[in-house]
Length: 637
Image (cartoon, helix red, strand yellow):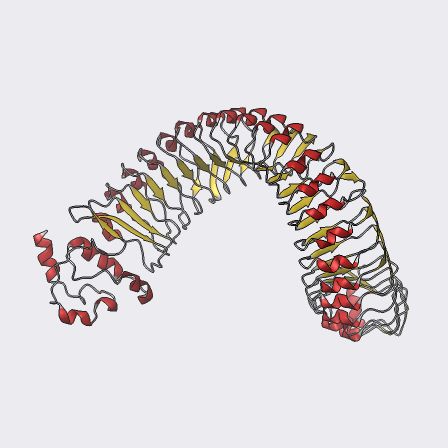
């Protein structure tokens, strides 16, 4: 050490190429010679490679006049004053990996995370034989994971996730027999998972998801990692069946292999994973039935199996998993009823069974789930009435039951779900009025009741739903006038009241809903003129007022609606001429003003609408004059 100190004393600030902040006036008070040891010099050499003075400012404590770096920020030393830990996290590091520190013989912890490090991990990493923790996560490192990592025989944590690493996972990692945490997720790794990972009998966490190039099957040898608590292989190209041997993992708490290419069936052996809390294997191609052995998992909290090819009935044994908070079995081919045993799931927060073939009724016991936030039953074959005690669900934010065979009236008690945001009961056989009390739900953002047999009027209370973004009540038997209070819904984006029996005039107040993207009022008995206030709807893509009794002219100012994609005014009593200003609606793909009383000539400007490729229908009017030449391009043989 004395020899290295003497060498250090001969080095000047300039020779070391230190940042300007270390060449400050303070050196007027110190001799130009330094007693800093070699490890400190190596760290300062790395610091000198920073290409950002703002980053260097975080290292103001790195004083070249110190004898050791032991008092510097981010550095810890052992009792013999050799560096044992370097921990720099969430600080912008505009440089490459510090190869200099790999010569630190007593370095146990190296954490350089979330710092934008670039370059590659050097193969000399294998020389740091004392390393216990190596965390280089959340940087911009490239290249491969060097096989020399396998020489780190006492390594317990290897975190290389969230970089741009390529190549295969080196099988030599299997030599790191003390490894407990292996995090490689969110890179660009390819190839198969080495079977040698199964040699890591102390491994507790293995995460390699987010690498689309990883393929092949899950190695059965992973069952040797008996301490494994977290296995994450989501968003990969993993194929084949889940190895039944994984049932030996008694400590496994989380299995995440979603959005992959798994096939086969769910192993009944999973029932032996007594610690399992989270089973996420959704968006695969898994078939067969849900094994009843899942019901043995007393600690299971979240079961996500959606978008597979699961068949059969929902096993009643799931009702034994009394700690379940989320069940998502959507987008499968499940049959049968919702099991009565589900009444035991008192802590359930999400029950999502959409897009299956489920029959029976909505069980009244669902009203006992005081923590339920999401209830998705849509696109099934559920019949009967909506239980009134759904109104007991004070935490409910989403209730989807569209595309079923529900009958009866919408229960008034739904208005007690004050946190309700999304309500979709479309495509059923519901009757009666829309409960007036529903329109006191100030958190309601989506109200969809399309294609039922609802009658009555829309009450003026609709104006209370200040959060509403979608109001779709089309294809019912609603009547009366459209309430002007709809104009109070400043967040409304979709307004669909089509194919009902609404009468009277279109409320000009709708023009106050500046966020509207769709206005569909077709198929009613509306009269009067197109409100001039509609020219304020600058975001509107679809305007459909067809099949009514609207009269008057098409406003010339309609050309202000430059976002228009579809304009449908057919089947009315509109007169006057076709506005030339329509040429300003450059995004128009469909224009249908047929079956009106329009006169005059066809504006040649319509031929300038380059996107008009779905439909141009001007028929059944009183138009005169020649067809403009520019329109012939729209004619198809």
